[in-house]
Image 1 (cartoon, rainbow, N blue to C red):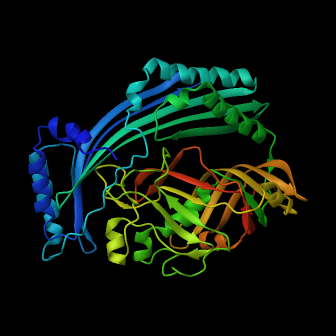
Image 2: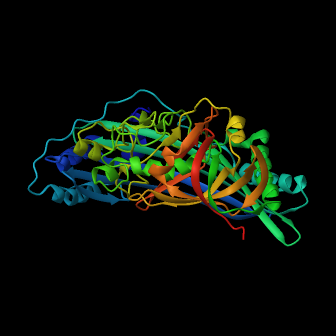
Image 3: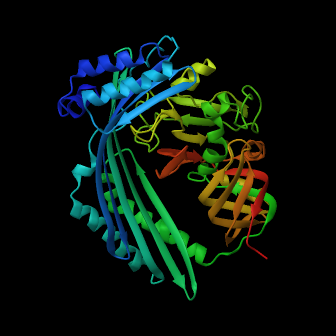
Length: 477
């Protein structure tokens, strides 16, 4: 983890703040509270979008500020400002003190520090000239059009950010982290007669642009987007009904993330609004199903050296061999539930309070060969890639759209189908997993998760799965 001295320049020296005086203001504001912290943030971000051979937009932004939080029981007082000044901290302190009116608590013990670092602290935005980034997107456009005359439109984008955070606790403890994040995306539209279809691919993580600029990397992304588009060009209408569904490895883990992962976050379970509430120690999934959330994987999009409360991230087993064994916890919900925090307290920015969120969530591999899984299906659907989806946390019901899917007939992959949606219930779908592949893969680094109006970068993953009796909504007449 970066030494706090590496962020002192950003947050104290430049702003003309006295580190010890600010620490004292935070300590006074949190006196008598059960928990809380000051979260200081500085962020640079950029986005370049090329559409049809021209730069459609090029944005650069920098932002800084702090949020001060005091926790008293189940109540939270939160105040934030974009101004880094002693006066702003004092105004925030006066605001959050109100939450502990009549409450006398003992400040919770702070997180244990860590010396590890999961990613570089280099600023990716500063390392590559603007012209080079533009040239990359133009090369992607030209390459896609040169690969297939049916290409009608290419959209490519490059985004990056560099975030520095500094956390001050009421006991005088300090923690810091510096987080790079980059992402490359490409979408290709192909046409044949009156029919138009789209394919897309993206990749990224907590590193610099260097890996994305490699010719093999960006060409691979374009090739994958074009492959999907061409396959969809020849797709037929998807059938509807209850059937066996084979779900592919990697990004399709987004179904696991949405349908099951949110229901395992501590706040929903403490408030008993999750379909998984009260089921710890009970079987909630088929034997062999083990689900992990791990924010400590080097360079991954969903990883954090420390979470946004200063707790080091870790690998947390949520479901083990089908048994529910744990939830994802921030500090407040962990304290109220009598368990330890898991390093999953996350926030979108200094203007948002932390809450339990996923990092990199995935199902562990099984022992089946993916081809064996497909051979086991007489008639069903093979969902390789997913687009959008939604879930109701309380009921667990979900709807997901497959962006690439095929019929399976007599154990063989058949024609591609268009318009297939998977409809089910999160807790129920886990019990219907009958075969688990040996091909666990994580997504290429593109996930963003929304909750209560906050978006944070996440990772997903899974091996190939066979799910029995899943409802498929189709378009075939």
